[in-house]
Length: 618
Image (cartoon, rainbow, N blue to C red):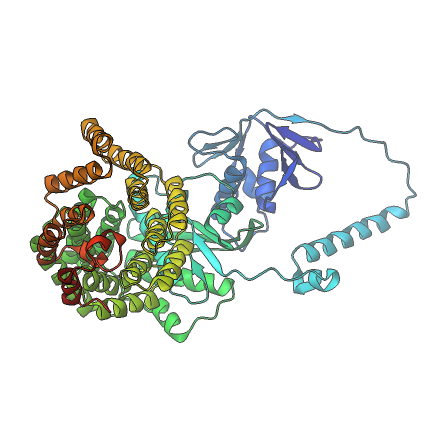
């Protein structure tokens, strides 16, 4: 790499300006936080615009004495950080172009803006050594202060220690294999690290749904941290080659974008679970969390895993988290293959049970087909590992939605959340359970905790909005559901919830508008939507109800038919269809005690008898 005799003191490129004297980067005149190593890489690139700066050049110039952090990982981290700060991407570079396995080129136009230099005055010769010594001493003191060696900076300047990190987000690990078909493996390793960290008490760990929204997103870390409400960020990469897995992890203080720690790990694929536990322990140590003996034991001694079973399990999870009926079916196939590869490993059985359960709840599989398979898989999972959080969550959901055993449901929800506080599905389902039992203050508190741990999850935010609605806090419910719309405008569920709230408030125009949005997103034909509006214009609220009844009958949905009759004031027909729903064990029956749609027939003795038969608490 050619080194020029003299470089400008400031180099400008687009909205940015690099101050070489102070070691600072500015954007539109505002200082942008940048770690020292990232600054030096940027400096090396912008001082040679349009030229290829090889990786060997960077190693020789910037890492000559670096014996603690491996060069490849440290350079990749520095370049990724620069791309986030600059708003750049490797796929469509505007600033830094990558030449794979060779080096980088700075491709944005640059300009220098030196101030003229004043010639130095002659100095006496005997002052030169003294000046050199003073400068050297100043440099040593500056380093000691900058790195706060021995707490020197705090003692001399009275600055408080950095605040403790008590909340973390694990950003999606980068897939360094170069094969897009391996994304499921990187995502699965991210999930596992989130799960292990979340089992450590004393730190809040953001759940999967929210962090996955930042996959391949180039945003400054402080901005991501603010969106997720966390103190620290864990990021890194994963690479698999044959039977070996290599993971690099870094811990960053989010507010200041300060790099606190990094480490590389390499294991055989059979030991991938112990690798995940080791990373979690190291992160806990770096943020000064004391592990209990139980936590330490859990992270230290996981059983070896069959590599084939583990890979099939990750593929199953990849489909499961798409939350679509066709993907639940794909997940079932991979879970079953994982079970065939390792019949004594519990997680695939729990995943199999959950997939069958969701297919039943979504109406994509009849209960007589789904539930026997659900129960068999769940029973085996608990026999193999009675401490598996996902299995206890599935037990809770089964007791709640199907068996209507409220005591067992609450016990299993509590067990799940004690084992894995970050399992947000269980947390917002528990909020729904508490709401169905009429325990609204507890339900609201639990739903808020779910949103805190998964702030960008549509389901968690919907749960909070629905709990507000059931508690008849309509203004809070509407505001919460509007926020949910902003998270994902193409999810029809928020519009459906809003339609129900406006309907209860007798704001039928608004209700129709929201229902039309939801129906459009679900692919309903325009004629169907026009029929709803026409029915309301011709007959008012009664026309609106009759349209709902016709739609429910078309779907052959007993619970919805019963609700439509209740709203029309026909108690006899409503109870007739409620009995059918009861016999079918429709999961929606758990709402019978709490939601206001049943108010028109709530005092009917037959309705009260049904509540008693379902063992709702009085």
